[in-house]
Amino acid sequence: MAIFAAWPLDAPRDPTTRVSDPQEPGRYLGPHGEGTTDGSSAMHDEPIPIPPAHSAWPTVSEFALTYNAYARHRGYARVSSMGQRALAAFNEDGTLPRRVNELRAVLFFEQRCWNHAGRVPDPGERVFVDAILTSLHEQTGGTVPGPPDPAYDRGPQVHRHRPLKRWWIHNQLKRKARRISD
Image (cartoon, rainbow, N blue to C red):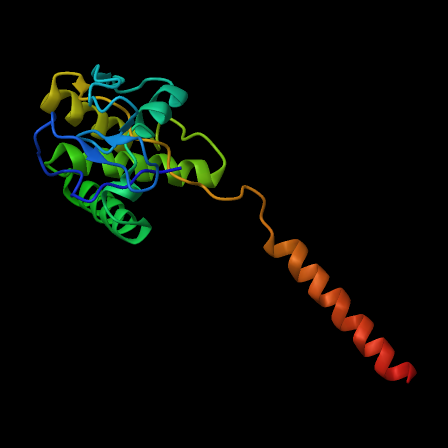
């Protein structure tokens, strides 16, 4: 379950302020939208290390998923647009987004694209991802503030449209057969 805060997640606020979680009474939201039960915002505040360029894909993928761009940037459409613009600019003149949160959102989107493709990028296809990791290292010194974002709700993992479509066709054929026989 994702926890959404009432303030923009990128906006700075006093980390000692306690804000009740509207979805779960008795829980409080920390400065990054993470939930705690004791009202403290110091839940997993250790920094998250950024993997170096050319790291194994599972390591890069795990880091990319510590930033839930869909929740932070208000949905798939914005993240997709940001990712496509960044890739086009990188392919055109080698530029990348300047802000850390934009770099992390683009990295998150790249991870989701490769995950959806069902394969790991080969070294030639990793140039863009490695450039993002290098830029993140240069801007942050190798770590980003924790805690990791809660995982986004992926919904049901079973693709139900195919069985439903087969079921619908089967029923249509049965109805047609009944009309012919009547």
